[in-house]
Image (cartoon, rainbow, N blue to C red; front, side, top):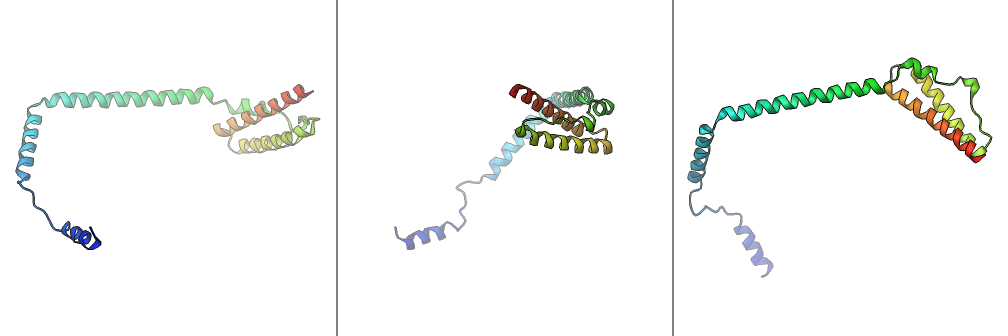
Length: 149
């Protein structure tokens, strides 16, 4: 097959082709039969099922929201306890190991910035978590210094 024959066949594909038999009459008959089956089936059963699904989904959403509120109330420390747990600036820890000194300086700076941010937004849960994480990292650094001797 050469290119000329291939192009001729491609042009022939552009022409409309009518089906061997009329399909619309069969499609209409099947749609009418499906409508008749739906009309004879119990509509109360499907509406009953829909009501149960709606009620179950609402109950699930209420449980999810209640669980989230409960979880937030349990994990959210009060601003007073997180601010009193911080150490004063004059009691900063200075490691003797020079490898740990840089990390201690960065953690102290991060802690000071978080404390300043907490003064602006004392109810921020995210800031409280970051401050707690920073204090945890400082205690881990102190523990590593004690392990190193």
